[in-house]
Image (tube, one colour):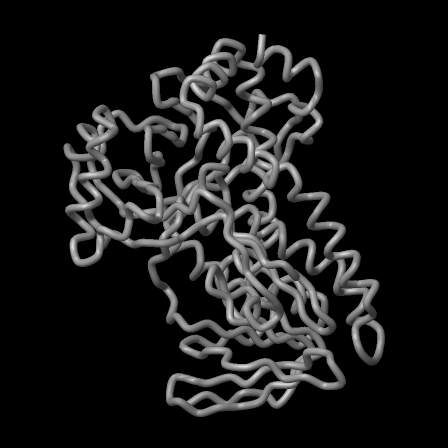
Length: 407
């Protein structure tokens, strides 16, 4: 059984990248932080496991990059996209118009990354309790003031907190209690595994688009690649009880990719996650906020959900630390600032997700767009920089760039 404190400055549901990074930043600032998670770390997690240089910048701030590299993390130079009719574009971080934190991103198993971040949060002074779940939120005069927590033995405790953070992922309990979750169409589901011996893996991540979905590949260790097959949710329903068979059936639509993957060996159970493009109507409420996938669960076609989680944690710290420094309830102004910061910093990802989803509905236009990006390499580099969070959206959404794509 776990002895929970009766109160904390901050209670965080979820100890993945968003929750652990938030816990570390707020604990470093001197606040008492309790973070809980249903899992026991280390554990595997369905994820593209791809990070841009901006994600690496935040990992560096948390002091864990060298540890991840010692554990086998792989440097990524960029992203290569292949459209459904064969057009290709290859964007490199180092050649984007704005200089990134470092020339390469990073790819590493979530089993390693999440455990390292949990330990970093503990080192910063946060209390992390594994195999514990948030059941209900506590309220006082209309404001959220903590939650009822159940530990691994089934014992329940009421934790009172000045700030309650929902970092509990796609199926966030905190998000559901705060307001309705919406899903954009088309709804997609990912089947993710690790494969050793995949042929012709380079130093960039890959996205291969097909008629019904897409496949992502990137190296996550010296001889291990992350392979993610993403299909419409309606089609994924036929995978029940036959996930492995379905994985290869869906992969068969990408002939060149399938040959490369089948040359290797699956070394991790195939994990399933989705549907994507989920968003919470409310990301803040008096006394509470959402971060990471609990706030927005992006379709992985935009890449780097880990960056969104880590950057979200930075925005929580930036907006909430001044409010926590004041006595009494956290001022509403702090929550307003958090919403504004999220809109400012994630607008590019929201727009790129919608543009890409729209283009996928028209294969010929999508293929031509990728071809134009591929023929003008600086445009591909700009696009990967915008997706990676270190190039401003205005570099793409301007008449000159759009004209080069269209004409």
